[in-house]
Length: 226
Image (tube, rainbow, N blue to C red; front, side, top):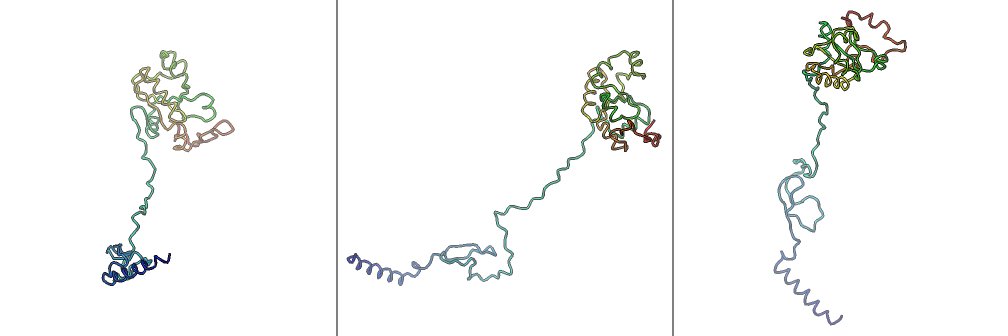
């Protein structure tokens, strides 16, 4: 190990002379970094630990720190409310059109719910109950048998005012499909059904325990009866 010391002294002497002749060789390397408060590129020593350049002449009070490019922008959730569903006037009608036909007395309104549901919930005044399972056979009856069975005139094939309804739109839509296949091409259904009718008129959705609606119909006879 002692034999290597002369070489060490020679290397140190050479390094000293090299630094004296070329000071930039021994100076810390400088790299360009953006200022933390503006867009100017500044020379920063790679050995310094100071976060901001002390040689930069701009005042930090005059700059607003720029947002981090990695920061995601704030997104506001868009409303999820969908626009109201449009009525298909060829096969459907809403409450307003139903009331117009009722007041005009020009409607054959058929409730396609089963008898037990009708007894528990009630139905729209003036409607005829024919359960969905019997619609096909009923619409194929001759007119005289229809009159004996339901005590009303049978709707014509071209009758646009043949309207089906149920608690909601599903069963009544199925009734329209059956009627259309049998030739009643202009028949429609009340898409809101019994639930929508109760919301619009204030009727109770389900009958009370006494088996009826009490004096509700009598108190509102002019409004809900034709």
